[in-house]
Length: 613
Image 1 (spheres, rainbow, N blue to C red):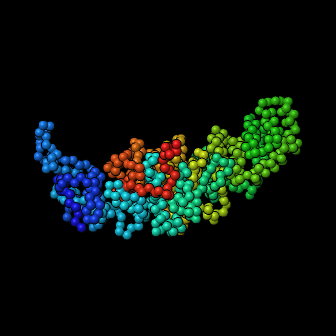
Image 2 (spheres, rainbow, N blue to C red):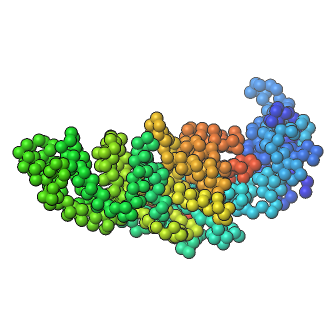
Image 3 (spheres, helix red, strand yellow):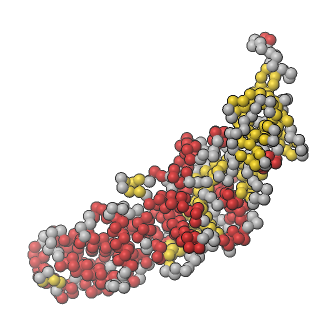
């Protein structure tokens, strides 16, 4: 088929050139050879023919030139007469088509006299980088050409993906559309059998029956709720994974110099409990040791710390009353009471039989063990940590100022985690996860929204890394985080001079190393400037919806080498559902209008107030 000729090159300036258009073709679309082609308008493609090479360019600007009238007086001004003006269009060279392949190169440039034609559908297919037999999914059409936008499955989904856009720009619909079409493809059965998808949903947008076109045989929705005493749904975590000092250091933001060593020692000791000694024997021995040295300077503070640890463990208050009396005696120097009790309780710095009976040591020991045995594993760990803190401060000269801030984080975190995770000691258990798992955090408190994404992400990443290292990549994991700025905010990167946010480091490791182990991230956010620049720079493919904030636009400009100037300037003007596809899977940026699903879509629609009212 002969291409529609529209003009000739009349000026060349580096990668910009000008076309003298043959006639005033003002139609936005032109029917040619049975195909609807885009007319000459800003952003549209035109083809510059140079022997067997086709130079592809986009329209950057246009104007008209008066050929006959030069008089500027309004009295004699006949400009813009039909036979008096010519249309001149400026083009920006994008690349070439040679041997049915699109390439970006500076080897070929337009030359004066080269004929310009409308870009055909076949040329568009080559430009958009889709090979004849390449497997693709379709998510919409190009904005200007209305050409179906086909995304190559292998080059796109085997990469880290970023989807960005302001609220209401269509970001959630695009994220859903991508994976809905993937699950509708011819590979559906093998995708669901050989890959696992985990969606971290902060706003509850994907908690909907039939979401992603899946039923309960392949879809598991976990609704995390910390507002109730106990969450209906729980996330299953492996015992050996959770009680790892490195994982716990990350969970509790432990400082490297003082708090990480404390946690490592405590975890090792906790895991050896019941093998060497029972919990109650260990902690009552600590109490007796403190009592023996009660006459030392400030040793009464150690007793007070032990009492508080016992109270936090739920020990009956009446069992602790004698210890509280003894603490008050030594702290406030009530000499008569101290002398009366001192001779009965201690003799030669040893606890007497009367002293054990008076202080109810055996009853405390039994009550302590009962509380420990009847507590969930996380509460057991917290009970142990409380007493371990007393031991370290009393005998290892650890300053309470260093360790107390850690416990201010540990206590609420453990109580929150205890509500929503289930710990299993079965190493071979598959954790009950299905092909697609949606973790809804809309009803979770701030501690859980901070902890769970990192805990779950690191666990499934470590498992995938171990499997891939031993057996090669036989399956893939796809982690999808909507509203990713909630946990990947770079402003919390450095809390102190020697402190780095471990949680951010976990995701930076995943995005740097995950691809080689078959682990892929998809991030969606309305604030890309809040996400760590390291993570942003490691994304391979992007879908950009409307963004207007200067910081967000600057972040994209600095981290996306495939985004050209025209596309960049278009971002603030994009309409709802319109976006720019760019990245390693695409040879040039593509302006796309993403199809909106009418029946199956996330719960992110705008509220129609007049309907509500």
